[in-house]
Image (cartoon, rainbow, N blue to C red; front, side, top):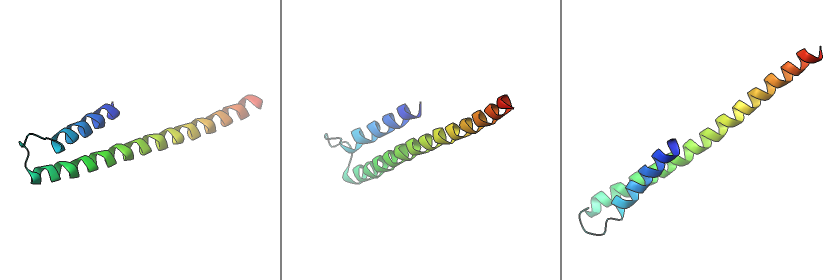
Length: 74
């Protein structure tokens, strides 16, 4: 779900930044370029946080599995 959100956000910023028909002035294009860069960084940061969360979950699950194996072994 979050991937779709950031993909749409980045796509919208790209369209507004690259608007060729003169509707968007130069100052606004600079702001949309800034917005695009920020959205891309947020998208990358979110992906990194997601991967980190999955690693933590795997570590926690491994710890639980080891504990259960010790109980079963005993």
